[in-house]
Amino acid sequence: MRWVVLALMCLATPGLATTSLAATCENTTYHGNRYTVCTVDVAHDDLRLFHADETGRVMGSFRAVEDSLDGKRLVFAMNAGMYHPDRAPVGYYVENGVQKMRVVTNPGPGNFGLLPNGVLCISDKAAQVVETLRFTAEQPPCRDATQSGPMLVIDGALHPRFLPDSTSRNLRNGVGTTADGRKAFFVISNNPVTFHTFGSFFRDHLKVPNALYLDGTVSRLHAPALGRSDFGFQMGPIVGVVE
Image (cartoon, rainbow, N blue to C red):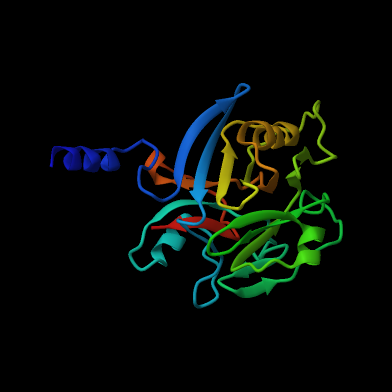
């Protein structure tokens, strides 16, 4: 009984990374830069994408997502890709098997069009970051999917356009997946970083073969176990784990 009580106390302690079986978030420092990393066991955790409610109104915030869950808990969430002024996804978007936006393969302005970009493809047991042209060629089945860009890491290599001496720094967030798709790492920088620095964190520290940039202007994180739920700009697509 004593150990049960102690375990319950640990679960209830604010400010610690969650000790439940769902996604775990922790703060870390690497080469002088601060990050929060949320690790998702895709085979176990209920990882989903969220965009609009049943009426078609864009949710846009972590609070609105949680209010839609019928009493379930949002244990982790993050903005999940770029969007137009009306908050419609810029690229490929699938939610619960329903495609809402087609794949975009052509180059264009902004970070999304800095090819190669990619797709986060989520199934019931795995999640993979896949470069867009490879995705269109292989057409993997995705229950949920969101396209964003640029790719941060492509088969173990940094995006070829990233410059080590770049002076463009921003708060940034992205996602990387293991080769078997069992784990996904959602990362947000807690101080401004360059693309090269951010991609290197995924490649060299997390050691994932593929990683995808999600955004940098509206990067937001919901990690209640860390006492954090960012607010600000209304978001488009959101990714999260439900418990």
